Image 1 (cartoon, rainbow, N blue to C red):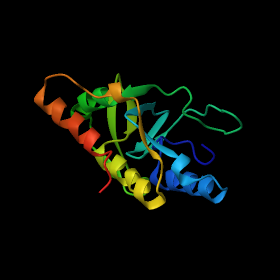
Image 2: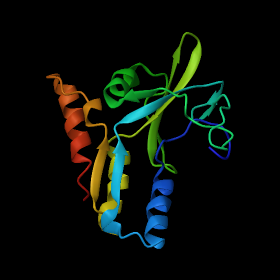
Image 3: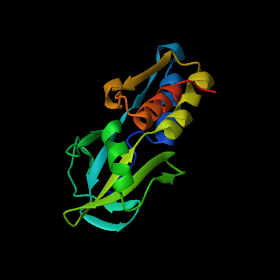
Image 4: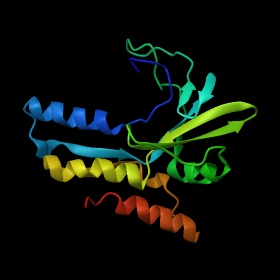
Length: 166
């Protein structure tokens, strides 16, 4: 993170768009680009919690950047769906980053979880047709809940369906 040190989406819409566009402008054929979407999130521990969307992180430098998520634990979409109903904020949508997040408190410490879900993934899959990309990949398909629980099955199906652009 080159700007402020706050919890944020892993693959924000505009940065994904900029990344794809820059490779195409450099001459990489779009069919050689595979859009990868994460089926996990980051569980940020707030060094200082100001408000939802303003979770200040401990500064950990990485490769010249003053702040990074290098030490932030990844949590699976399955874990996110179990934790979300226990949150103090519920799902919050960041319209600029086109990504959801929520806030929870554990042992008197605020956490902010940023993740991707069917809505955020659907926003990114529009790039497949727009740029005629080579395909789509998931980082990691085993991170959803394949149990026989009907709600989990519905959420898993929604994740798979999000991969198909309209």
